[in-house]
Every structure is written in C-alpha cells, then in structure tokens.
Length: 150
Image (cartoon, rainbow, N blue to C red; front, top):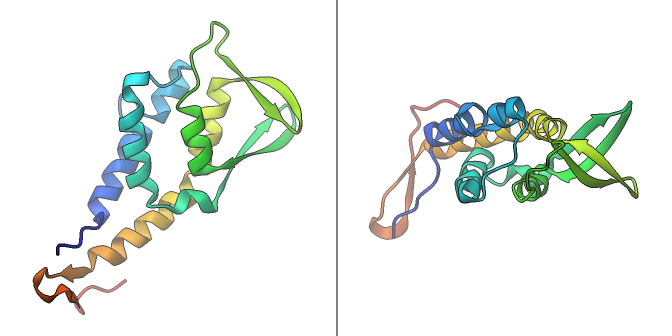
C-alpha cells in the first residue's frame, strides 16, 4: 500500500495559487467579485492543500464599522463564501451578532485572507514534517530520514 501525503512544495504551491493566482483571493478582493461556480471545486482543492485540515482551528475575524466579528472557522467560512453570488452593489447579506447586515464582498475576502496566515503556516510545518518521511510500499513500514532537520 502506498501512503501519499502532501509535500511541502505542493502545500506551498497551493497557498501561492490560493492567494496570488489570476482567480486567487487578491484578485477577488481587487475586483470585488465572487467565485465563479465553475471554479468552486478548484477553490476547494486549493483550500484543502493549503490548510491540511488546520482551518478548523482558527476563526475568520472581520473588522467592520469599528466592531470585531467572528465569522466562524477558516474552513467553514471559506466554503460558505464560495457559494455567495455576485450582487449589483458588491455586498453580501450576512448575520452579525444576531442582525443581518450588508457587508462589501471585498471586506469578507480580506477577512478570510488575513485569517489564513496562521493555519497556512501550520500546514507548511506539517507538510515539512511529512516531507521528511520516506515511505516504502513493501511491508507497509515507514522509514525516517535522519538527515533532515526540522
């Protein structure tokens, strides 16, 4: 049986694509757009490789109108925002502290991007550790490379 794990390079590349690609978060912020429905599966793939499950451990924090709002975990909010649809005024109706408010999509994407840094760093650390392992399919045993320092 072959054991497959995301390598450091794969995680790093996914993180780069998630933020900086032509359809990445920086571009969505700049254009004040939502994700094209045809791109959702690619967004989810990038998110999964970028976070390696660490997105549940961190909240998305929105600073808006002088207030601080917790929008839920990075993983949960990223998947919710992927299903928002474009509006003429570039705002989304979301519930904040029990009250529905219109928030510019740009602010929501920015809050997500800013909340990604810690879980992305943890994912890179995890990927670095798993990249240091050498797996052999024979016998199902794992061998660790002592040459790699973490």
